[in-house]
Image (cartoon, one colour):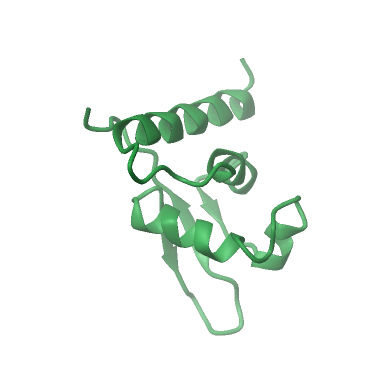
Length: 98
């Protein structure tokens, strides 16, 4: 299986596992697709929200989805300078509590 497909499946499984473990606060529907788009080949993404939205995501809901992913630990966010987009790092959980 190509690395990109394997990564996409791992992301989808992690999001599904989280949603199963926390049914009272599931991640947004597009969370797995967003993560797969942002981290198709690397563990780090430094793209603007406009660039990410151009991949087919709603620009109005994108910031709240990103915040949820940071809150749940799927992403960490760092700012290198005020002129550069945030640097996002992917953190897939090895397991989610049952």
